[in-house]
Length: 108
Image (tube, rainbow, N blue to C red; front, side, top):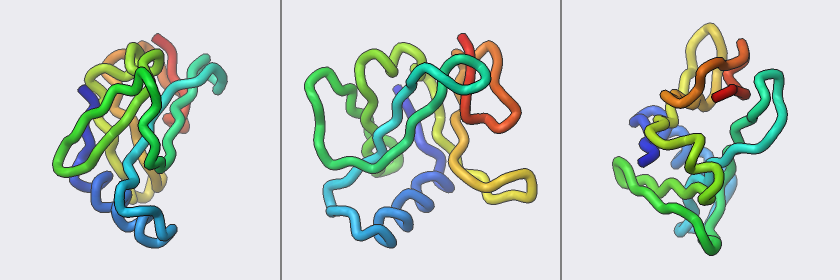
C-alpha cells in the first residue's frame, strides 16, 4: 500500500483546485531510472487509470501507481514539507537503501 499524510493530502487538493484539475483527478506516483542515486520519483496529477495500475485510497485521497513502480514503492508514505530545509512533496520510502540530499532520487 502507498499512503499519504494529512499535509500531503491538503497540499494536493489545493494544487488540483489551483490548476483546475477535473473532479476525478488523483495523485499518480511512479519511479523512473535517473537521478544521482539511480532511481527518481515521479509525481503528477492524472484522471486516467491505465491497465495494470494499482489503486489505493488513504484519507480520502486516491493514489495510483503503475505495476513496475509499485515494487519500489510498497509501504511508502507521501508527505509534504513546508519547512525551512525545503518545500515540497517528500517520499518516505522504507525500501530505499540510499537517498540523495535533495530526496528526489534513491537506490534499493
